[in-house]
Amino acid sequence: MENRMEVSNVSKRFYTDEGELLVLNRLNLELKKGEILGILGPSGSGKSTILNILAHILEPTSGEVTINGQIGYMFQRDHLLEWRTIMDNVLIGLEIQKKLTDEAKERVEELLKTYGLWDFRTRYPNELSGGMRQRAALIRTLATSPDILLLDEPFSALDYQTRLMVSDDIYQIIKKENKEAVLVTHDIAEAISMCDRICVLTSRPATIKSTYAIELSVTREKTPLISRKSPEFSHYFDVLWKELEHNE
Ligand code: ADP
Ligand code: MG
Image 1 (spheres, protein in one colour):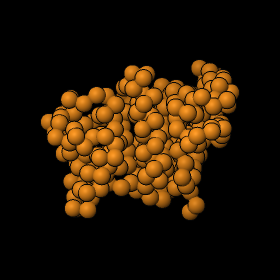
Image 2 (cartoon, protein in one colour):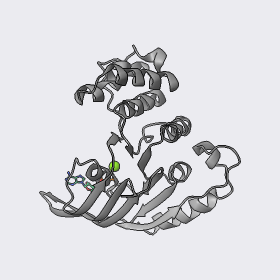
Image 3 (cartoon, protein in one colour):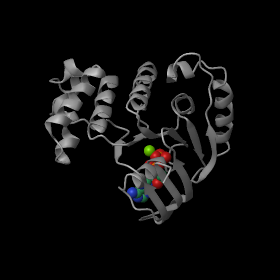
Image 4 (spheres, helix red, strand yellow):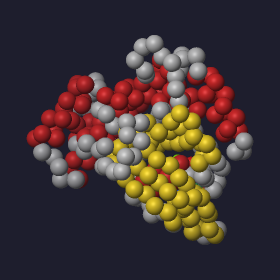
């Protein structure tokens, strides 16, 4: 398989006390090698459900999911354990998977050094800023060496300034570590600045309404902050804004 991931005709129905709820309706998408794929949709449209299906946390009601590689999942909240130090937090995935070798530990130490958390390794999560916590959560996700990252609105708990900085950090980490990622968000500007392609969801039951390849002309090496200043940015923003508006 050329692609990292293929989702074909996936539907998901929840059964609740109030009855049935069809959340995903014959969804099709693929994650290509080397790309960050954005999934853009309003709140409640089924974005987290899609990631939970990709991570095998939920079974689709029908349809097929093929995944070529190991998955790392970064949830909307950072889920750092307050009673563990940063080092013990980032090692937890390796511990659970019984992969805590000297080599893996060295890799994590390298990641902490590269991404500015080494001096904080013996601190506790509540001693860190929101942005640093988010970076720690990403390093914990990267520690088990996944091929594909699933990111569920990873910046939504951060204030605007921090969000810009952390999305720049995280973008560069993903590209430098040569990972693919699926980024779920309801933030249009975030999607354009981070993603190589963006799929827009319809309102519930969600299916893919349209897909855009994001091609921005930038003069320096591309980062989300630089992308936001490219001449095409506002064009994409307008198009995607209209596309989402029609969902309401
Ligand atoms: P999003 O992440 O886009 O905000 P979700 O995927 O979390 O949306 O949820 C989509 C819809 O499915 C919502 O209406 C939500 O209430 C419903 N839903 C999600 N998980 C469950 C579940 N386990 N049981 C019943 N309904 C659910
Ligand atoms: Mg969600």
